[in-house]
Image (cartoon, rainbow, N blue to C red; front, side, top):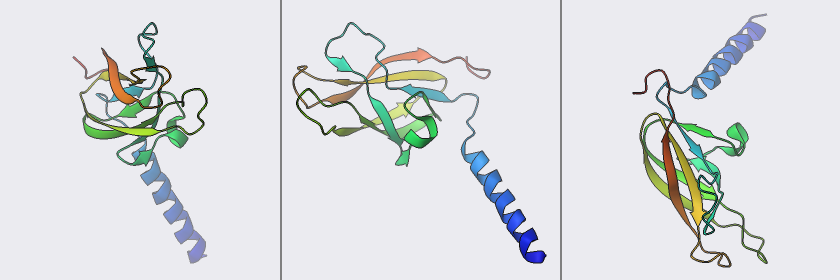
Length: 132
């Protein structure tokens, strides 16, 4: 009987710890891999795969990624150019300000080149209760 009660306590503590990991402050910001300016033919959408070494794909898919203000290392990937099949990852160091939406894209000098660099294409106000 004591063994099953201990297991319940451990599971409850684990659930509480995991729930705490998913919470963000009211002044959190958001990362997007979408293009803000669709007319720029040198930019391409990205997928944000990790923030500070922690995978974002399982938790957020390829949508918006919430992030706390401060310095972060963002890992991204974009689709390879025609004829190639292996995408290349890049990292971007970013000092995230509170209550912002960051649109991060892949920029290529030429649409046919595989090489690319991550660029913050646009930053918008995200709003929020504690945002001014």
